[in-house]
Image 1 (spheres, rainbow over the protein chains, first blue to last red):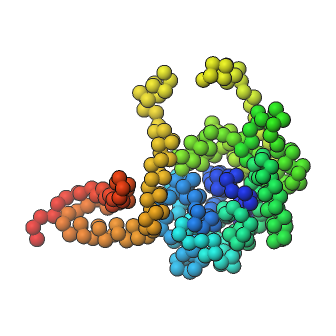
Image 2 (image 1 turned 90 degrees about the vertical axis):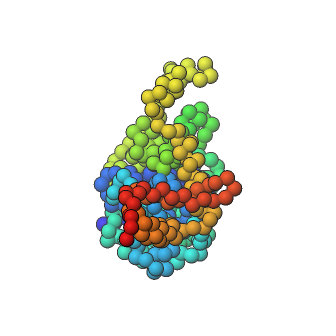
Image 3 (image 1 turned 180 degrees about the vertical axis):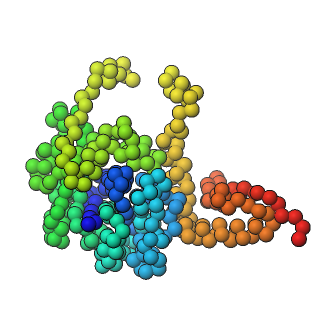
Length: 262
Length: 87
């Protein structure tokens, strides 16, 4: 039985696309057949995060408007061959995708894929409504900042109104040291406020920047803390019971480095 | 010191440089509004024309738009296997 996730947040810049790329890559690395659909029409980026920007021939709009069958528009990942991307158009806008056509497409894809991940645009307008239309489960990504949590709450309300009742939360870009010092909201604080089932906390990690630079999601890097957090989330999505990670305290040498100013 | 050693032993290209190069290519395509489909058609046509005069290695052929100071250049790298003479 296939499952359709939509990755959404309300606020822009919290890591929806990074999350989509990493979870998709992670599920595929575990042997699942996965398709990622970019619905951020006009501002597409999922192709860049996966290093597939030079392989795009057709896009989501070509498919929903019936010009090509969806299989022709899929871009297969270079290294993980059970991972596919359906990119969107960079020249059209959000009104170009008909929600009903997207639902129909996703139902068709259920036959071929174990997981369908839909990368939602920021905002609560038509693009959001279209992106969530086909989803079984909504994954809300937020950050430990008051504006991001407020927007997440708004999105959770909107999802409820659209009768999308299965909602999971990911808290992204946590800085453990700041949480420890009481200077940043922690996962537990955000859980208290939003009362949503939390499936992961992802630490702020420089490796996310460098891996994005290369077009290789950080989940492929064994030495990335964020990558480890994403691997845990992938396990939980597959029904495994994985305890939440604890973050290593800065060791003696890191402290020493600070003293000597690197 | 460590950095210098890494360089000597052929450390990977810096990810910031990779990002810059990837961005340049993507932005040229975005701004020029040339779809990958059009590029593919162009490639097919170029292959047809050139194949009249020489045998080319189609799989290793690269064609892309590149930044050339203030203008956009069409850059093609077409490995020639053999010239066709006479006929």
